[in-house]
Length: 160
Image (tube, rainbow, N blue to C red; front, side, top):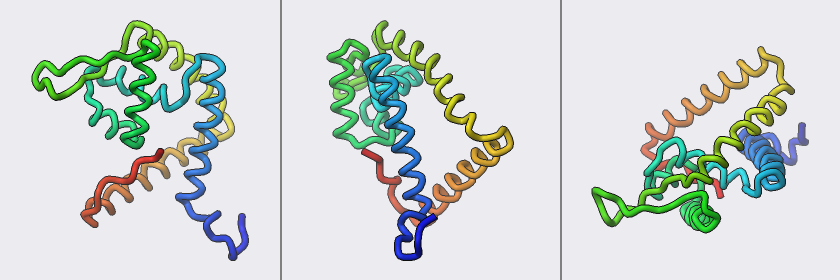
């Protein structure tokens, strides 16, 4: 893989970051061309679809994105007419996020295309490899979450 002089290229976190960035870049290129939105825009839209009325704090927690980035994305999606904000009924200090009809349509259309993209990408792996890969991802995630809890550390840093 790499020479002993460059062990960073072999670290799991580096390899996962690289895979993630390549995946996001490929997806964003496709979604921007086809729908005019990025993968991160879609992440926000799909999370609001999953949990209508969520707050910005909850969206930041779920999205694993930086607070300032989420705020910018939400503002842009509101301006584009995909999201709308509503003052909280129980707490007027909170703002709840909802999909507009255009946002609902965008989520539906992009999921249809996204499922095809995901299948195409994962077709690189055999069925057995995919099961092993998913099992390994789950196992590593569980181990790191347990480690974080036992170490009393804060939540993992969010990606930008």
